[in-house]
Image 1 (cartoon, rainbow, N blue to C red):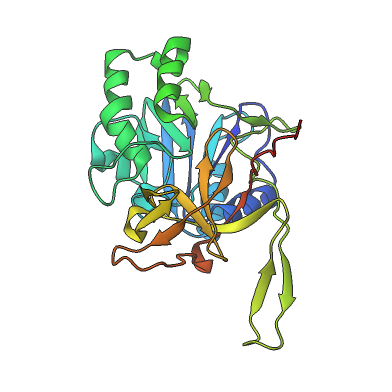
Image 2: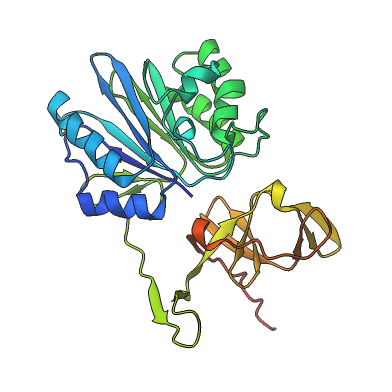
Length: 298
């Protein structure tokens, strides 16, 4: 569910194979931001790997890629739809048109990885955008250095319960949540910068289509939204929003802390009251599964 890749000043841009891994695992759009000449430059809305690579190539002519701090973001859509304007990063501002611009400058910018428990005010606005508009921008107006202060960072984490990175015009980088520092100095919000191994079989008895085998550590899943319907679980009706389903129709709750899916008992129903399987292979992504630990018998 999205990945943030942070390249601090003084280290090289990640290898192209790593960039390709991040794209293939999070391919609903990409963007980047970098600090130069006292401001943060944002370029985003790259909806193909080819255009993203081309943009990085052009950037090499404008800045010293090694000496400049750069943050990359690759998106998986959860709310707000898939569009160039909904790609990250974003300037910290309360003006929606500025958040949707694919090229802009700002004194402070942000990228997010995770799901924020907040209801967007408009259909085409993501949870991250809604949080910036209604909470982060007012906080920035109140105190310009909130993202540098332990109390300010704690306040943000308590609201988002996920991962976020700030970049300011001086090149200062501040993170919220747990990040992975790789051996080359790159910093990632999760492990989807690594290649995923997918095993295929040839179904000669079917329609000659390729079908995948699932890994024992995870499965390919589709994110559900409130438009898919609701879940009946242990006698309770739950909105399908923020839940996942796999090819067999099994349901999962997303655990932000471990970036994994936890199996739940339940059935997905559409708004007409019919039991359905909303898995869509075209929008599936690989998610690690966290199985509840079995209690030992005394």
